[in-house]
Image (cartoon, rainbow, N blue to C red; front, top):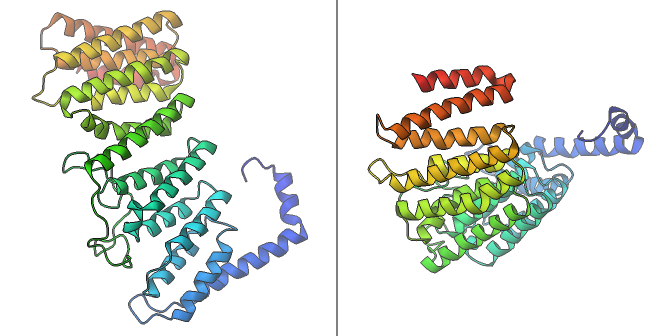
Amino acid sequence: MHNTTKTEWHAKTSNPKSKAKAVRYRGAVAAVVGTNLGPPSGNADPTSARRVLAATAAVLPLNPDQSTLWNRRRRSLQLLDLPFSLSDELKLTATCLHRNPKSYAAWHHRKWAVAAHPGSTVSGSLDAEIALTTEFLQADGRNFHCWNYRRFLAGAALGGDIDGSWPAGGAVPTMGPQLVATTDGAASAHMEGGTEGATEAPSVTGREAVVRREWEFTTACVSANFSNSSALHYRSKLLPATAVLRGGGAGARLALAEEELRDVVRPAAYTDPEDQASWWYGRFLLAEFARPDVDGSTSEYARLLREEAESVRELIEVEGDKCRWAWSGLRTALVLLAGVLPEGDAERKGAEEEAGRCLEKMATLDPSRRGRYRSIAVVAEG
C-alpha cells in the first residue's frame, strides 16, 4: 500500500484481529455478490434488493473502491421501481469519499444518483454539493475526481443536459459529457417524476452567476498555487463561457487570453520557470483559445504573439538560457506567428529561423529527447 513498507504491511495483515476483520469483510462481499436479484428483464425480487442495499450500505464505507458492490447497489435501486432517496445516496458516498477522496466508484455513484434527480440540481442541494467539492479541493487541490464532479454540477446548473456539458451560447457544448446515457437516452431509468419538466432552464442572470462563481473559484485556487494544473484545466474549460459574458466573438476571446497571459501565465513563469503547468496553459491560450477563425482578422492575434515572444525572450535572458520550457514557449509563439504572416514576408522568415534555433537549444538542454526535437525540425522544414 502507499507509504507502507512491506514489513509494516505484513505485520498489519498478520494480526489476528485484522485477519478476523478480513474474513468478515470477505463474507459480507460474498453475500452481496451471491444474492440473486433475478434476470435483468424479469420480475424483480424486492426482498433480495433491499437485502443488497442494506449490506452494501454497511460494507462500502470499509472499502469504497469495490465497483462490483456499487453496481449491485444501483441495480437494486432500479429493481425496486421506486424513486430512491437522494439524501441516502449522498450520505453514503460522502462517508466513502471521506475514507478515500479519490475513489472512482464512489464519485461515479454520486454523479449517477444526482443525475437521477435532475430537479434537485437547481435547488438547495446544488449549493451543498458545491460546498462539498470545495471542502475536498481545499484538502487536495489536485483531486481530479472532485474537479470532474464540480464540472458536472456546474453543467447541470447552467441548464444543459445533466451530463456536464456547457451550453456556452451555441449548439456545440464546450465541455464534454460526464455520464454515459443508457439505451433510452436517460442517465437513469428511475428519475423522480420523469425527465420532462423536471428542470427549468435557469435565467441568463443565473447562468452568469454560475460562470462567475466558478471563474472566481479557479482564480482563488490558482492564486494559492499556480502549479495547480487541475485548476488551470478547469479554467480552460471556463474560458469560452467567460468570453460569452464579455460580449463574445474573437475580440472578447483575444482580450481574455491577453488578460490571462498577463495575470496568470507570466507571473507563474517568472516565479518558477521550470513548472510546466503555466506553460501548458499559455500554449492552450495562444494555440487554441485566442486563435482566430479561418476568415477572421489576424492582425491583433499577431500583435499578441509578438508580445508573448518578447516577454519570453526577456525571461530567457534573466534565466541565462537554461530553461527548456521557456525555449519551448518562445518557439510556440514564433511558430504561431509565422503561420499567420503571408508567404515571403521577412518577419515570417525570421520567426521560422528563430523557431529552429529554439529547437536546437532545447536539444542541448534536454539531450535525452534530442531525437524528438530533430524529428520536429524535419517536419517543420518539410
